Length: 102
Length: 102
DNA sequence: ACGCTTGATAAGTCATTACTAATATAAGTA
DNA sequence: TACTTATATTAGTAATGACTTATCAAGCGT
Image (cartoon, rainbow over all chains, first blue to last red; front, side, top):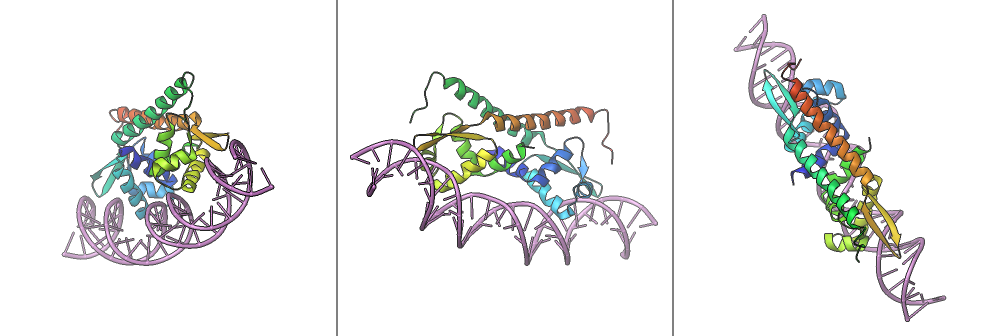
């Protein structure tokens, strides 16, 4: 059920760009705001959504706060998509023996 | 860039339930509406969104229309999530040799 | 302590969207 | 041809959400 929040989080283009920028190395909030061309509050709000979806974590470092990807949410998302994929493949294989009923 | 639409499509819980129900076997629109407890137009609209995201396809069969999962969109989503995952792992491994700058 | 910097939160606004009811189209049936 | 069934489309509405400005809290340097 946790992947639901992940989909909602990554549905927004700005939030997805944020996430993609974090995937390589940790970033501070202001740094992200400068690069994405949105205000600092907007970035903070987006990061809060990503955090609730377990897609990012953060640690305070001095007066800044470093955000980095959270493997937990990404793994959950990956597991979900993988299961969908294999289910679809299974259904496709089964469609040769079993005709769609109703 | 096509995964963007996939995320947006699956961000809605109703739409995700629709998609999950299709993953096993093809379904007609009315059948889906009955099971999900939403009106038929709502289902048609959701299916249109899923179709634009390349997550489902449909074929007319008599006066009904059968919807089934589209491997194209699912594969794109899977590729994206997999790349995120490996990038995060790479960054984690690199973090031992390279300290996060700025 | 004071000021500066960094980030989070609050309140308000505008745009998007998920839904319903009503209507249109099209395929099958008598 | 008329009638029914199945789905799509349109129009309107209520809720959600992404953004802004303003403000608050906290850490660091002088």
